[in-house]
Image: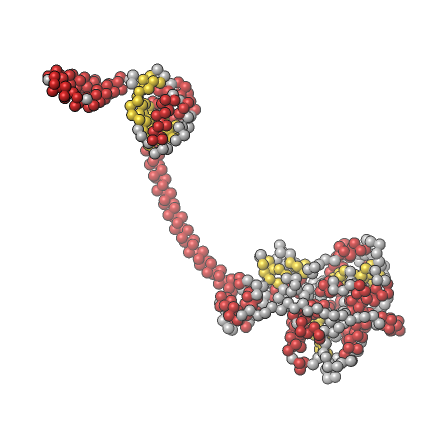
Length: 616
């Protein structure tokens, strides 16, 4: 189960989480930071530093509320750092009363488990046989060693944490089947709790922040709840556990610089450095007491934000002093004797997540693309979240980072992009001007064409002959008034609604045999000339001709009963007769002599007579 994850909708890619992650467990993908659960040590650094609340951790409130509403006995074990967190509650008994008001049956102290584990460490160190140990009180440190320093697993102290030790004590005292809820400052404790079962089982871990929300939801405060005391067993100096070296001072482990063998440190960077040096240098020769959080447990990521480290440290010390005033040492010793027979040992798992370094040439290739020289690769601005440009280049090679996360690289690309954008804008502006000129020219041509078209239509409609243009579907594209008049009154009425009969089917206007002329011309691309037809009691002469091959044809209809057309047609046809029979006439003339010639003269005189009539 993933303990810590990103809320991608809230992520602004500020890279703060990447900068603070000690495990390189965060990569940028699909426009947001993504936590890699296999690499994550659940330290909660990312939760603490995210300015946009875009990182959340596993919420235990719902599960706990379900337990509290059941018939099961639910016991909470509280970390001693409550004194540093809940300083707004003036008395620890008020805090215990508020916890019980939520529905918990009992409230026990983890400080007693801290006492027991502290005593176990004293035994371990006192029986020193040349092997140096790393304490296992911080679950984030344990995760880090198992994943990134697996060679040090043999040096991990084989002891459970105070939280787990307290769970063992509670189950021993109150029953194996009770529900145990740990309340503390640590997010990694949620992960630790999942590793233990049976008598070590912790059912749910609540952070202090989650408990505060439960108080708010239940509207609980110290003014509306009664005092209550912690349930036994009561702890002693183990209340100092949440501050650095507190546990060891509680059980008088030797911390003398000259005679002791113990180094204590806290904070992510210090822990990493200590582990690296412990692994590299055999001359170190010291036990390591490590806490991942800067300031130790009192500054855990599950505490309220904005807490003051030294104030909290002082509050824990003062709380411990106050508790010890009424401390029953005899009872404490009896409980220690009773429960120190429990098995507090543990084992570790090699979960090696180390990544082999990429080839140096690949790293240099990335650095070159980033525009970094040897000097910059050792340092850098840190805006990407990595300690150096080289570390960033390695992350890019390993697939955990993207090139555009580099501020200077992105800026250079941005400048180049702006430069290209300016050139593109200039080209677009020139193109726009050219388009405007082209549009203006096209508009002039359009206006000119419109003028010509209008003139042509006017001329078209003034022609005496009927004109029609038809498409390959035998529908009218254009017709003039003379054609409409030839068709009769019905066509005239239609033309008032549909000017020019545009779109009308030819088959609805002309007889089939006339339509066949059009079909023939469309199919064969040949002209049909001077065909006489009868339409509406009129003798018409029609010629059909192709305009666009197999697509558009035109036709001319002439009314043969119109005098002008009659004269023209008679002249045309007599001329045609003479032209067709000229040779024969000449032969006849040769045979018949002047008689035939006289016939030709008579025909020509007829033509001249009609031509004169036309001129009048």
